[in-house]
Amino acid sequence: MKILHVVGARPNFMKAAPVMRAFSAHEGIMQSLVHTGQHYDANMSDVFFEQLGLPRPDFDLGVGSGSHAVQTAHVMLRFEEAVLKDRPDLVMVYGDVNSTVAATLVCAKLGIPIAHVEAGLRSFDRTMPEEINRLMTDQIADLLFTPSSEGDDNLLREGIAPERIHCVGNVMIDTLVRLLPKAQARWPQLSAELGQSLPGFEANGGYALLTLHRPSNVDHPDGLRDLMAALEELAEEMPLLFPIHPRTRARLQEWNLQPRQKNVHLMEPVGYIDFLALQQNARLVITDSGGVQEETTFLGVPCLTARENTERPVTVTIGTNILVGEDRQKLRDEARRLWKEGISNHQIPPLWDGRAGERIAAITIPWLQENQKSC
Image 1: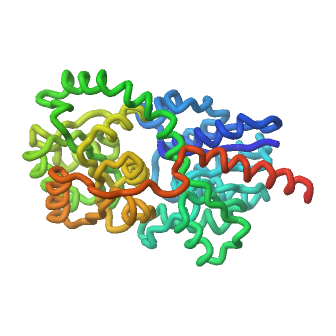
Image 2 (image 1 turned 90 degrees about the horizontal axis):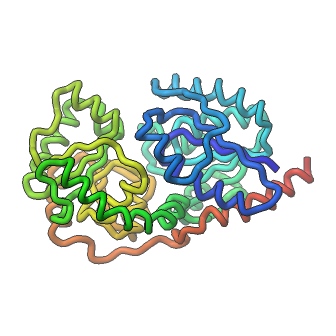
């Protein structure tokens, strides 16, 4: 049996790695990997393959950037050639990026079974391109692997047959659990390096970690100006460590919004192990990333999410995550409170135990065997 995995952006790599590892423990399973090139910056892509132990891609589509329509269309055109050449028995797609829905549409037209890892997540905000990708992918996929029970509920409400839905836990946490010891061992050297490369920064004195990349935050000059003003005000009270996404750096430069507060420490994007170390040792994380909401919940680190909604509500209801939306005063107030008080009570969601990939393999292999018999 042959399984083809499709990845296109950094979060996909962290999700695919434990799944591929789990399948490799079973005899008779051949695997191949397609990297669409949706993230093409070396700091955003290559280092993740190395650190996560992913094999080099069998197909690198080199799609690059573009509008949603252009990027999705290019993935479809190039992926169709790859999948026809590879002829897998199943294609596994991950998350909610354009590569995910593009590969799903191609496979549906070709009659190739599809499994969606991280299915069922909903923000209920159709202005988010990712929400459209989630909805379309889940309607088409044959196997839907959800990270938590609310994903199952969402899919059932949308009329998905129960036998297609499997709650397996969070594969992102599989990667975190496996690499957390390396991140902990890396921290002493990393903190020393930061002290040398960032004038005035002292990691052991406490810091807030900042990530921003979503269009709703960085693609509108007035909104980005207001957000940066709030962050620079916070930096007067707490150092902000800012590994900056290429998209965000370009917007700050284009609109002359580079931070002038010396306590906003800009740095290049970092690999997964370094970023995990930065998260674990932060007193506070401010983000608009879905994956960071999950990782901080597992780590018990306070997280403020600069979004009006989240497709990961479990991180709010039992985790460490607080939504602040576009309310800059709420961002200031909550950041100051959490900086002083931290999070007093949180839980790790069920099945976020580092074994989600194993459960996916245990469900998929019998399904494939049965599917082949019926063909």
